[in-house]
Amino acid sequence: MGTTSKTDVIIVGAGPTGLLLAVQLMRYGIDFVIFDKKESITDLSKALVVHARTLEIYDQVGLAQQAVADGEIVQKGNLMHNGKINAQLDFSNFGGQLSPFPFMLVFEQNKNERLLYEHLQHNGKEVRWQTEMESLTQDANGVKAVVKRTKGETQTIEAQYLVGCDGASSLTRHLLDLSFAGSTYPRLFYVADVDMEFQADEATFYGTLGNNSFVLMVPMQGEKHWRLIGNLPEYDEQADREVTYDEVENKVKQLVQQPLKITNVRWFSSYKVHTRCADKFFKGRCFLAGDAAHVHTPAGGQGMNTGIQDAYNLAWKLAFVLKGYCQDSLLESYNEERLANAKRLLQTTDQFFDVAAGDRWYWQFFRDNILPSLANVVTRFSAAKEFLFELVSEIGINYRDSSLTQHQDSFLEVKAGDRMPYFLVDGTNIYDRLCAPKFHLVVLSDGQQSYENLQVELAKEYGNFIDFNVVPLYPSVVEIFGINQPCKVLLRPDNYIGLISTELSLDDLKAYMDELLAIDKKPKTPLL
Image 1 (cartoon, rainbow, N blue to C red):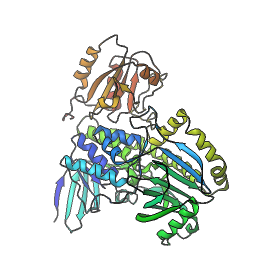
Image 2: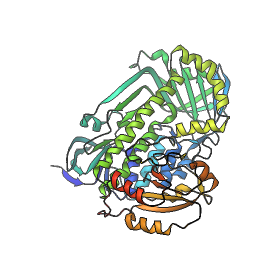
Image 3: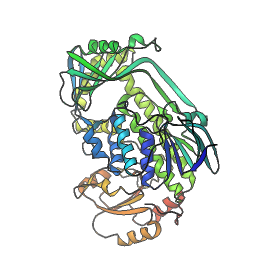
Image 4: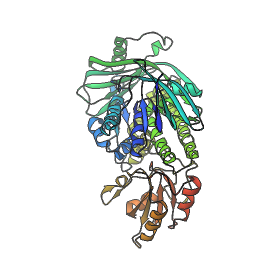
């Protein structure tokens, strides 16, 4: 007979999504058990790029600078055709003034996992490796998961909630009997990490788009270390055929048509690309996040980043319910917000993927005749680069249609449901004031009053879980928000705007907290 243990949240899977969820729950003082059937964090690079929004999330827990130091910032891109560069893309200062991390960072999945795992260990938490879920049951009072270690011992874990972060083949999703509808591209793709001798510009990726095939070569940290991504159209109808590395190397040389020598293969895999999404991201007290909930094409490097944002969105909601601040109906907004985002993402990445790898004649014509000129022009204009940055970096994701969003002053440039814009206050990052795991009330002030009474009233009503900041209406702030009069901005714990208003009393804020979040003003347990 196995033993029984109790916790608040069970996390199934210790990839980037599960580890980030654990890190976030730890911020709120929520107890959890996280386990994974593999032996430890992956030693394969797998997912490649970390975007600005992920780095902003890492920065809250002091991990962003380490990620940047251990990664490789992409500065430029060269598109090639018949062995010659026919388009140059400039990604330097890609995001302008939109984020403290205005770039794309090559920071592989294994490095993300190590960063998050070591942070957990440093704070006294551990992952139960070589542990697999055997069964899952739930009722109105909680969840029970029976797990088994590779050595044969079984244990029952009881919790209030469970989150399946166990990948595209999710056992959690299967046990919950949630659908995973979608499609599979008929084309065969490959990915390889290699040591390669190739005459290249510093911090520059290279892409060659052929008639029915492509290769993308991305520099990674370390001398002569490259990631190769491409397709093998000659084997599209032979998906079960084992592809050798030599075939991949021959295809790369055929497309690039420039001298290159691959001296070592660190990792290599061929695969089919899937586009799938669960019909909903929760059932009862159990949730799905990351690849367990949605998978899509690798266009734009969105997969790992999206899973991390799933976990970030869910963590504060679980914490506020478990702490007694909110009714459990708050958790329904996770499905509402992240399912809608996943559906948009699937559509967008599918379109991007068609541009790069679509085999219809018009995509081939576009790649050969239009894309090079378009790319040359677009990345020379800051407005165009910032538009692309918002799209790719995921800082442009908004929850304007969420039930947690209250719209009032529609004339403002920034809307309720948007991510809090980035700007500097007295030379420092505004996000540095928004690191506490709670709601934030930010007053944009013209300096005519001190707002002491407002601060006292806020502390009296919601002191445990809303902090208070006054920010001057600098010219940059006026430009960003489209307003030159005082207003208040209520931020959720994930730094998305729940309410923005020129009304400087707390009446509308109280209505928001009481009606939309069903707040208990005297919670059982204070937040950290």
